[in-house]
Image (cartoon, rainbow, N blue to C red; front, side):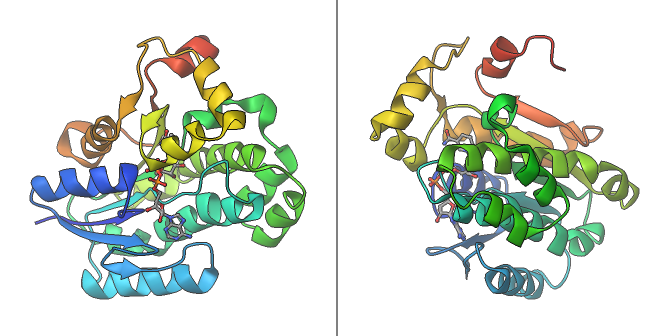
Amino acid sequence: MKNVVVTGSASGLGAAIAGRLLQQGARVIGIDRHDAEIAADLSQATGRDEAVEHALSLADGVLDGVVSCAGLGPYDESQAIMSVNYFGAVAILDGLKDALSRGHNPAAVAISSLAAAVKPMVVSECLAACLDDDEAKAREIMKEQDGNPAYITAKRALAQAVRRRATEWGQLGIRLNAVGPGTMQTPMLDRLMSEEKHAAGIRSLPVPLNRVGSADAIAGTVCFLLGPDASYVHGVMLYADGGSQAFLAPDDI
Ligand code: NAD
């Protein structure tokens, strides 16, 4: 049976991913602030370390999959967004890398976002601090900023961090990919749609498939990337966004 860690397993996409993995017979180790096998706050270094340690002990040091999905929304505070959506996500991936290297056909997926494609709103100095693993600097740069650029910058940094790890992880035999969901029906979207500032942007986003995606659609994409049908897919950012990124940047491949 596959041992898979899923962060953000208590809600939305993470819950759908955990549910789908359970259906497939995996043993899921959920990490979230509440309602999970491991309760941990991924905004804090201590919470990340405890989560990694606890997951390693539950899995006896051997994992076959990791899904880093926990995240805050653009309505949250900018510094917390940087800490959870980038530094928390990367800490879980890196902290569980050795356990994955001992797994069976191991693979990991980071949940980024279509937001990563909104390059004009990326705060480049903060992006660089993320990729330099300088959390204090990234937080300081975003101190006065709105949640939206923090969300976009963290999600772009996460997708780039995945690609930058492709060589090292590939040599360890671990496939690592990112998923960029578009507008998906989850509690995060409900909250966004309840605040006009965010709802207007979402309503104006072109979606060629002309519909909101389900959490289950992302669960399917993630399970594909974790499974044998994706055995040669490594280091990609796979947008699952109804075609929005293709609409926004048709020549960007
Ligand atoms: P959600 O709010 O329903 O779920 C997010 C989960 O992350 C929650 O269970 C929450 O408790 C957990 N979390 C937040 N902060 C945490 C912390 N400090 N420590 C531990 N857990 C924490 O949102 P969702 O829509 O399911 O989002 C899941 C992921 O998908 C997020 O990373 C989000 O940015 C990303 N995403 C969502 C959409 C969308 O349209 N819903 C689109 C693109 C990307």
